[in-house]
Length: 351
Image (cartoon, rainbow, N blue to C red):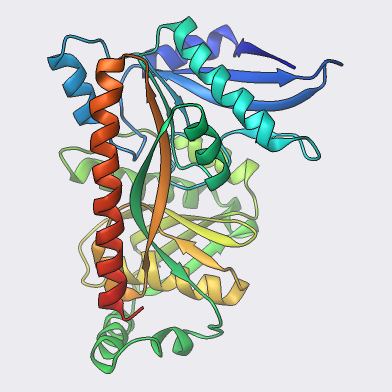
């Protein structure tokens, strides 16, 4: 068994360096030269676009006189969704191959001069393999909706006490009273280039609204997503009676899950965000019998609308022992705080 480091095309490396994301990939081959495992990764010159925040760690490193960047990240850019980060061929010994990949990530960090290795939004078996190689597990919380036995929107509403149920009904009714139409556009409906332009415009409204906003995506991204993810890409679009776009969100549908992403609005309309980003997504899950709706990171207000606190996991290794020790201790305390916070949330929800 052997592993090799493979850089992408020089053009991609140049573009990545300008953006602070330098593509890497680890490939593992068996004795016959067959590819049996891989780990896509990036050398990063900053901590933007990750959703597992380590700004405090970078600050600590600087105050201690240690260089923090570049660092090595195994994750999907701008996507706070759990999924496979250590890829293994079906039928192979995944447990062993994950250990090989974990060790190779550490070796790659050493070869490239990266201060640390970060594997974000990883699966449980990956977290275990990484922990066996000295990584420290870090936990966070996302708010996700679970369909369970619900078949209709009324089934969803039935989970709430009367006061909350009536509030959600009022939020839905007020949008209808304003004669605002909300459509979920997908497949051939998105062949209209104007809709892709609207999706990009709505994305930019949120980026430009907040002082911390940063435009990671361009118009071409939405065109590529339409072309390569046909059947998965969905535009939830709210329009006035006259047809004016008021707000919208981008969703991606998987086999069992719906992933909510970029929200934007051209003007403020009360309760529009809840309807576009949450209630339409729940309706879509009910219609397609999807198990889980992940509307993205953050937002404790999702709890009041039936979204449950769900633990997300990442793994981290800091090559400088004087950093790894204190950060590992902090992360252990943070894990316990996350556990207690989640239990309190579930208790408040009546779980």
